[in-house]
Length: 434
Image (cartoon, rainbow, N blue to C red; front, side):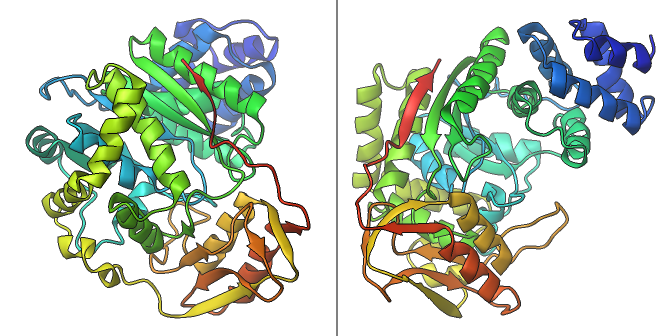
């Protein structure tokens, strides 16, 4: 078998066997297939796409290319959650303690942010002392004894995906459904959960800009999960505006804690309740979604959810006093207010521009090696549907370095569309794919 023949076959639109896909993927990982031939293969897939069978095989090969996590020592059904990435998406910080407080163990491996979307691991590191790198033994012990652990992905989890993703990133082959779905699901399968709940973002701040393409991606991932024997559900959720009112690491942790105390923005709590309800139902903690929603809301009202967050911080080496004293998060004291240019209503927001504005302040990274400033970001005082007066503050920028401050302010001002008419109320959850 030669790489040339596999590339030619896919270029001509012919379905590849599992052996041919494995030959290309593992050959690339082992250094036997050069990057220029793998790039050609990825471009052939980009234009010719993959069948459901090819997609299933690609995912399995990538999932088995490195370590896999065995969660069987943890009692009960283990359910994982994954978001395709958005702006202000601090969902895991709220969702994991809520779900764990309801009795479903949460063994969560999360990633870092890249581009205009934030990463859970970066956010958690805004908590003084919080360790996101645990040994597998520590990880399992925390889940068994405390019902919760949130850590960074192990270095050797789906290494084929890491290497292929890096090549896709520089060869304009990122946005192809089969490649996206297999990338996400290979890591989820390797992480060992019995069930998977997917939060597929759609809108200006998401990877998928329209509902049709988001639905295609959701169906592809649900199909892969089910073919691998994992109960899988996907929610299509609105990312035409940022989630919550903050974008930036320490700012988002503060908002997550406030939400767990019952003082957070409605959209963030609603999304966590909807995702958590699917997790509790798959995990057989609740019989119906309505029962699950009530349990999750009660976890906030009773204080159990915020106490579970405190417990998570303690067992992972962080300063749990942060729950009571939010100043410990070290949010920058330097602020700049962006004012409304006119009267009216915020008719729409470009969430991607808000994310880029935050990134310009130093809250995000353009390359994986970039160091980020955990103390900076954006606080949105006005969002879609809100009435504004000329000169009123739309948002507050938290910064340390003035270098890109005005550029960030211009970017976020251009994210706002202000009109005389109030927009129709947007749905947070567009639909469910299962």
